[in-house]
Amino acid sequence: MSTNILFVGPYRQHDGWGLAARDYIRAISSLPNINLTTRPIYLAPGNTDASFNDEQIISYENNKADKYDYVIQNTLPEYFYYDSRYGKNIGLFTLEINNFSKTKVISNINRMDEIWVPSSLEKESLQSSGCTKTIRAISEALDIDILKIYPRAILNPAIANHFRFYTICENNFRKNLQDLIIAFNLAFDLGDPVSLVIKTNGDIKELTTFANEIKQSLHLNKPFKNEVWMTQRISYDDILRIHSSCDCFVMPSYGEAFCRPAAEALCLGKNPIVNKNSGMKDFINNDNGFLVNSHKTPVIMPHHPIAGNTDYYNANQHWYKIDIYDLIKQMQKAYGLYKKDKKAWDEKSNLGISQKESFSYSTIGKKLCIQDSN
Image (cartoon, rainbow, N blue to C red; front, side, top):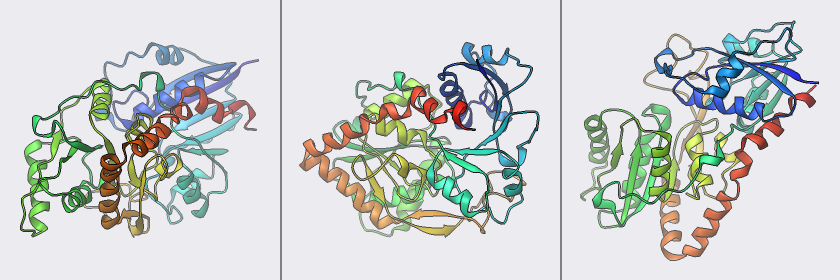
C-alpha cells in the first residue's frame, strides 16, 4: 500500500532554498511505496528559474491524490497552514538564529504535527523557544553521484603554486567575509605561498574596495595579499571545479543551518574550517576539519534580509560570532599540517570523503522514515 505525500516548497527557485527543496524531494522519492505530489511556492520571486525543466519533479507536479497521509510544507513558519484533512502536517524550515520565544511565529509552529530542521542546533533552539511539537533534525541531502574531483585549475597565475584557502557564499553580512579577510591577513604575510579565493556575488571593484578598506583599517606597516575574487554566475560543475582547485574551505559565518558548500567541501576532502556553534557541527569536527571558537552575540544587522518581518533577525535573538584569533590559529594550523605532515592532512581529508554517503538521497530518505513517524 502506497503512502500519499504532498510536498509544498520553493523547489522552482534558482537559489539555495530551491536546491535544498529539490534534494529533499529526491530523498523522499527514494523511499519505497511512496506516491509523491509536489506543488511550488515562491519565497523569492526574483530567483525563480523560468527554464525549470526537471522532468522527475515535473512528473510529481502532475500527480494528485484524493487524500494525503502527509503534507510537508517547506516554507517560512508564518506560512504554515494546518489542515485537519491531512494525516500529518509537517513544517520544514531552516534557522540561522536562536531564540524564537518572543515572536508570533512560535504559535504557528506549534500548530503543526511535527517540525523538521536540518541540524541539532536548530532543534535545541526551537525547544528552548517554546516549541512543544516533535522536532526532527534531518540533514539536507546532496546528489553525491555528481560530487567528484575535477583537475586542479590555475584560477590565477599569481597563485599557481599556492596553498589555497577558499569560501563559497553569498555576499551578505551573515557570511562574515570581513572577519575572514582580517584573519587571513593577520595569519599570513605577503611572502607566504598561501592565497584566499572568494566565490561570491557582487561587483569586483566594490568587493576589492571593501577588502582594501579592511586591510587599511589594520594600520599595519606591511604589504597585503590580493584576494582572488570570483563573482560571475557559474554552473554547478564549475562550483565543483572551485572545490577541486582549492585546498581548505573556510566558513566564518555568524549562523548556519546546514551550509551546502561546507558539506560539499567535506565530501571532497577539503578539511573545512567552520564556526563550532553552527549547524555545521553535526558533520564537521576536529577529526575531519577544524572548529573555530565563537561567542554568543545579539543579531544586529545593517540591512534586514526579510523586509518588513521583524520576527526574524532582531536583537532579541542571537547567533555566534567567531573568535578571530582562533580563526587565525586554525588557518595557520591547517596550512602547517599540510606543509609539515601531508600524511596527517590526507588522513583528515579521507575521513571527510568517507562521510559522503551520509548525505545521499537514500540515507536521508531512510532518516525521514515517513511511514514509521506516527
